[in-house]
Image (cartoon, rainbow, N blue to C red; front, side):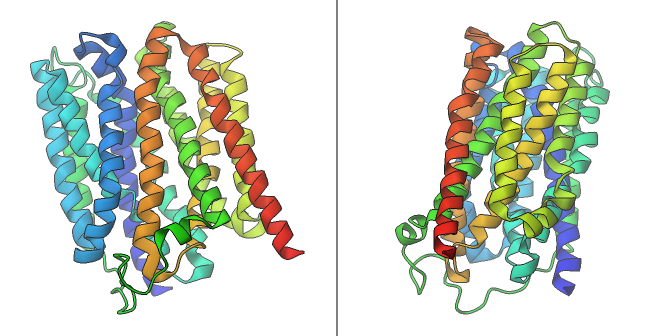
Length: 395
């Protein structure tokens, strides 16, 4: 419990700072890319570059932190975040699309390490506290709902004739603050039995990955995040297309991020009471509600309601999938299992983010939403399959 009380608040603070930066980027990057790119269909490329970098970082980040420790890995990642924010600011000032993408790519490397905040908390506490630890880390993102979009709105015109340059300059401060918080982190040492590189006593990765609950966790985690990334990334472009002013876009993204993270205060308790698969099922249903609202209108109210449903859907699916994943591996297997999971998740996120700009630019908002249907269908089928497997084991 002492480890829980010390490390979880610190890791939640780091999560809050990382997600504040992410929500600012989500709110602004497509619009900045649209302004800088010659081919407007590539407006979401910088955001996709961030997610691609996150995807490519997941496996080496896990293995590196196994070698040097998670604290040192998180500190190294903060330096990438600071550098990336500087690159992005200069790119806007100079009007360089490629340099802007390079900046968001470095921020993606930072996020690739930072996504292990939740695992660092879960692996440092007893089994009955894991769901709560993951929930509290994700709850740190509630701060992001207020900080990110509002910071983007306030700093948009901070630097004259360079919209959003001030917004990316403000990211430097967020990442420096994250670096300072990490100085107080004290994670428990890895036990001698935890040869996480996969060359020791742990099971082969294919054996771990063949478990039904591992499959359910990974598929629902990656597609749940993919649904969120596709709809969320296209939203600022869609709202711009329908002539909604930027403050309204900022408002919608703020409520979306609130939906993503506010439920985390009680998602762990809901999982403990109703079961992880039932909470994930609720997340799938809410994803369907988001789709239904998006297909019925394009007013600010429609965007607001749909993105709120989308945020809560992601919360239930992602926290549920993370919790379920922690049940499928032994301590000595955690790095390779977590790395495979996050690689799958952020590969899907990268593809969804890149697709969002192309689909929205060429085919429109309705087509973007039609793209959500197959992913939601697979999520629902996978959860129902997982429930049937568990019921058969019980009987």
